[in-house]
Amino acid sequence: MTHSVTNPLINWSEIDTVLLDMDGTLLDLHFDWNFWMHVIPQAYADKNNLSLEDAKALIHTKIHSQTGTLNWYCLDYWTETLNLPIAELKHELRNQIKVHPQVMTFLAFLKAQNKTVVMVTNAHRDSLVIKLEMTEIEPYFDKMVSAHDFGMPKEDIAIWSEIQNIISYNPQKTLLIDDNVHALTTAKKYGIKHLLCATFVSPKLDRIDPKDFPSFHHYSEIMPS
Ligand SMILES: [Mg+2]
Image 1 (cartoon, rainbow, N blue to C red):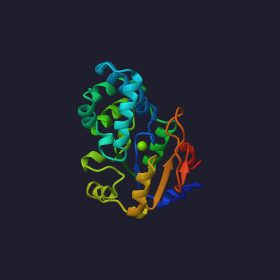
Image 2 (cartoon, rainbow, N blue to C red):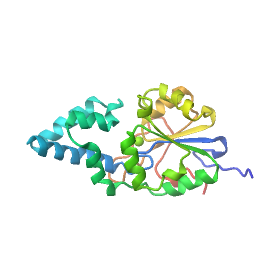
Image 3 (cartoon, rainbow, N blue to C red):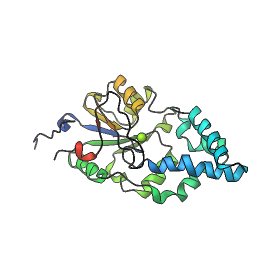
Image 4 (cartoon, rainbow, N blue to C red):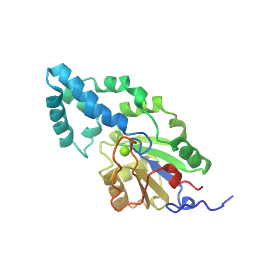
Protein backbone atom coordinates (compact mmCIF):
# COMPACT_ATOMS: atom_id res chain seq x y z
CA MET A 1 0.00 0.00 0.00
CA THR A 2 1.42 3.35 -0.94
CA HIS A 3 -0.85 6.04 0.34
CA SER A 4 1.13 9.22 0.47
CA VAL A 5 2.67 10.01 3.79
CA THR A 6 3.36 13.68 3.67
CA ASN A 7 3.76 16.45 6.09
CA PRO A 8 4.58 20.14 5.60
CA LEU A 9 8.16 19.52 6.74
CA ILE A 10 8.89 16.12 5.31
CA ASN A 11 7.69 13.78 2.59
CA TRP A 12 8.11 10.40 4.25
CA SER A 13 7.61 8.46 1.01
CA GLU A 14 10.97 9.85 -0.22
CA ILE A 15 12.81 8.44 2.78
CA ASP A 16 13.97 4.90 3.44
CA THR A 17 16.63 5.44 6.11
CA VAL A 18 16.41 7.61 9.20
CA LEU A 19 19.55 8.53 11.13
CA LEU A 20 18.72 9.70 14.62
CA ASP A 21 20.82 11.51 17.16
CA MET A 22 20.19 10.59 20.80
CA ASP A 23 20.93 13.28 23.41
CA GLY A 24 18.77 16.37 23.02
CA THR A 25 17.04 14.90 19.96
CA LEU A 26 15.34 11.84 21.49
CA LEU A 27 16.26 12.34 25.13
CA ASP A 28 15.86 15.33 27.40
CA LEU A 29 19.24 17.07 27.44
CA HIS A 30 18.70 18.27 30.99
CA PHE A 31 20.23 15.06 32.29
CA ASP A 32 23.57 15.75 30.56
CA TRP A 33 23.43 19.47 31.25
CA ASN A 34 22.83 18.96 34.96
CA PHE A 35 25.49 16.27 35.08
CA TRP A 36 28.24 18.41 33.52
CA MET A 37 27.21 21.79 34.93
CA HIS A 38 26.41 20.76 38.52
CA VAL A 39 27.17 17.19 39.49
CA ILE A 40 30.70 17.00 38.09
CA PRO A 41 31.82 20.42 39.40
CA GLN A 42 30.48 19.49 42.85
CA ALA A 43 32.29 16.14 42.82
CA TYR A 44 35.48 17.84 41.62
CA ALA A 45 35.21 20.54 44.31
CA ASP A 46 34.72 17.91 47.03
CA LYS A 47 37.61 15.81 45.85
CA ASN A 48 40.08 18.68 45.44
CA ASN A 49 38.98 20.89 48.34
CA LEU A 50 37.96 23.71 46.03
CA SER A 51 35.02 26.05 46.24
CA LEU A 52 32.16 25.11 43.93
CA GLU A 53 32.70 28.35 41.97
CA ASP A 54 36.38 27.58 41.37
CA ALA A 55 35.61 24.00 40.37
CA LYS A 56 32.89 25.22 37.97
CA ALA A 57 35.18 27.77 36.36
CA LEU A 58 37.97 25.24 35.96
CA ILE A 59 35.76 22.54 34.51
CA HIS A 60 33.93 24.90 32.17
CA THR A 61 37.30 25.96 30.74
CA LYS A 62 38.38 22.34 30.30
CA ILE A 63 35.06 21.40 28.67
CA HIS A 64 35.12 24.45 26.41
CA SER A 65 38.62 23.58 25.15
CA GLN A 66 37.30 20.24 23.85
CA THR A 67 34.09 21.46 22.16
CA GLY A 68 33.42 19.72 18.86
CA THR A 69 36.04 17.03 19.46
CA LEU A 70 35.49 13.41 20.32
CA ASN A 71 37.09 13.96 23.73
CA TRP A 72 34.17 16.20 24.65
CA TYR A 73 31.96 13.09 24.56
CA CYS A 74 34.52 10.61 25.88
CA LEU A 75 33.91 9.29 29.38
CA ASP A 76 37.43 7.81 29.50
CA TYR A 77 38.96 11.16 28.65
CA TRP A 78 37.07 12.93 31.45
CA THR A 79 37.64 10.13 33.93
CA GLU A 80 41.37 10.59 33.37
CA THR A 81 41.45 14.38 33.03
CA LEU A 82 39.33 15.08 36.10
CA ASN A 83 40.32 11.96 38.01
CA LEU A 84 36.65 11.26 38.80
CA PRO A 85 34.62 8.07 38.21
CA ILE A 86 32.48 9.64 35.47
CA ALA A 87 30.54 6.53 34.39
CA GLU A 88 29.77 5.65 38.02
CA LEU A 89 28.54 9.16 38.77
CA LYS A 90 26.38 9.04 35.65
CA HIS A 91 24.93 5.74 36.74
CA GLU A 92 23.90 7.23 40.10
CA LEU A 93 21.81 9.87 38.33
CA ARG A 94 20.28 7.50 35.80
CA ASN A 95 16.72 7.96 37.07
CA GLN A 96 16.75 11.45 35.53
CA ILE A 97 17.11 10.05 32.01
CA LYS A 98 13.94 10.46 29.95
CA VAL A 99 12.71 10.59 26.39
CA HIS A 100 10.98 13.63 24.92
CA PRO A 101 7.18 13.58 24.58
CA GLN A 102 5.97 11.59 21.56
CA VAL A 103 9.35 9.97 20.91
CA MET A 104 7.95 6.46 21.42
CA THR A 105 5.05 7.25 19.06
CA PHE A 106 7.50 8.58 16.51
CA LEU A 107 9.72 5.49 16.71
CA ALA A 108 6.66 3.25 16.35
CA PHE A 109 5.62 5.29 13.31
CA LEU A 110 9.04 4.74 11.69
CA LYS A 111 8.78 1.02 12.35
CA ALA A 112 5.25 0.85 10.93
CA GLN A 113 6.56 2.63 7.82
CA ASN A 114 9.36 0.06 7.47
CA LYS A 115 12.09 2.65 7.63
CA THR A 116 15.61 1.58 8.44
CA VAL A 117 16.36 3.37 11.70
CA VAL A 118 19.93 3.99 12.79
CA MET A 119 21.13 5.78 15.87
CA VAL A 120 24.18 7.92 15.18
CA THR A 121 25.43 9.43 18.39
CA ASN A 122 28.56 11.20 19.52
CA ALA A 123 27.90 9.69 22.94
CA HIS A 124 30.42 7.25 24.34
CA ARG A 125 29.35 3.57 24.39
CA ASP A 126 29.24 3.58 28.23
CA SER A 127 26.91 6.56 28.13
CA LEU A 128 24.79 4.87 25.46
CA VAL A 129 24.45 1.72 27.59
CA ILE A 130 23.11 3.69 30.59
CA LYS A 131 20.62 5.53 28.40
CA LEU A 132 19.34 2.39 26.70
CA GLU A 133 18.95 0.74 30.09
CA MET A 134 16.76 3.58 31.33
CA THR A 135 14.57 4.01 28.22
CA GLU A 136 12.66 1.76 25.86
CA ILE A 137 14.05 3.03 22.59
CA GLU A 138 16.52 0.24 21.75
CA PRO A 139 14.15 -2.26 20.02
CA TYR A 140 13.23 0.39 17.44
CA PHE A 141 16.72 0.62 16.01
CA ASP A 142 18.20 -1.53 13.26
CA LYS A 143 21.69 -0.38 14.21
CA MET A 144 23.34 1.85 16.77
CA VAL A 145 26.48 3.70 15.88
CA SER A 146 28.68 5.54 18.35
CA ALA A 147 31.09 8.05 16.84
CA HIS A 148 33.70 6.57 19.16
CA ASP A 149 33.67 3.41 17.01
CA PHE A 150 35.28 5.47 14.24
CA GLY A 151 37.40 7.78 16.36
CA MET A 152 35.74 10.90 15.00
CA PRO A 153 32.64 12.94 15.90
CA LYS A 154 29.75 13.85 13.60
CA GLU A 155 31.43 17.24 13.21
CA ASP A 156 33.89 15.39 10.91
CA ILE A 157 32.45 14.85 7.43
CA ALA A 158 34.33 11.53 7.08
CA ILE A 159 31.98 9.88 9.56
CA TRP A 160 29.13 9.79 7.04
CA SER A 161 31.11 7.57 4.67
CA GLU A 162 32.39 5.45 7.58
CA ILE A 163 28.76 4.72 8.45
CA GLN A 164 28.30 3.39 4.91
CA ASN A 165 30.53 0.47 5.94
CA ILE A 166 28.17 -0.43 8.78
CA ILE A 167 24.86 0.11 7.05
CA SER A 168 24.82 1.11 3.42
CA TYR A 169 22.36 3.93 2.89
CA ASN A 170 21.38 6.10 -0.05
CA PRO A 171 22.06 9.72 0.99
CA GLN A 172 19.31 10.87 -1.38
CA LYS A 173 16.75 8.82 0.55
CA THR A 174 18.11 9.44 4.00
CA LEU A 175 16.93 11.77 6.74
CA LEU A 176 19.11 12.92 9.62
CA ILE A 177 17.45 14.37 12.71
CA ASP A 178 19.89 16.08 15.07
CA ASP A 179 20.06 18.99 17.51
CA ASN A 180 23.70 19.54 16.55
CA VAL A 181 23.90 22.10 13.74
CA HIS A 182 27.55 21.19 13.06
CA ALA A 183 26.55 17.55 12.50
CA LEU A 184 23.73 18.63 10.17
CA THR A 185 26.24 20.78 8.28
CA THR A 186 28.74 17.96 7.64
CA ALA A 187 25.86 15.61 6.70
CA LYS A 188 24.60 18.17 4.19
CA LYS A 189 28.09 18.59 2.67
CA TYR A 190 28.37 14.82 2.39
CA GLY A 191 25.11 14.74 0.44
CA ILE A 192 22.47 13.58 2.91
CA LYS A 193 19.40 15.14 1.37
CA HIS A 194 16.86 15.34 4.17
CA LEU A 195 17.88 17.20 7.31
CA LEU A 196 15.87 18.30 10.31
CA CYS A 197 17.05 20.18 13.34
CA ALA A 198 15.39 19.15 16.61
CA THR A 199 15.18 22.44 18.49
CA PHE A 200 13.46 21.27 21.67
CA VAL A 201 16.30 19.74 23.68
CA SER A 202 14.74 20.13 27.10
CA PRO A 203 11.85 21.96 28.76
CA LYS A 204 14.50 23.45 31.05
CA LEU A 205 16.90 24.70 28.38
CA ASP A 206 16.79 27.26 25.56
CA ARG A 207 15.70 26.14 22.12
CA ILE A 208 18.43 25.40 19.59
CA ASP A 209 18.94 27.95 16.82
CA PRO A 210 18.54 25.78 13.69
CA LYS A 211 20.40 28.32 11.47
CA ASP A 212 19.29 27.56 7.90
CA PHE A 213 18.02 24.04 8.56
CA PRO A 214 14.36 23.06 8.57
CA SER A 215 13.40 22.48 12.18
CA PHE A 216 10.71 21.24 14.50
CA HIS A 217 9.89 21.60 18.15
CA HIS A 218 7.58 18.67 18.81
CA TYR A 219 7.47 15.27 17.10
CA SER A 220 3.81 15.74 16.20
CA GLU A 221 5.01 18.36 13.70
CA ILE A 222 6.83 15.78 11.58
CA MET A 223 4.37 12.90 11.71
CA PRO A 224 1.36 12.65 9.40
CA SER A 225 -1.72 13.65 11.36
MG1 LIG B 1 22.35 15.70 20.39
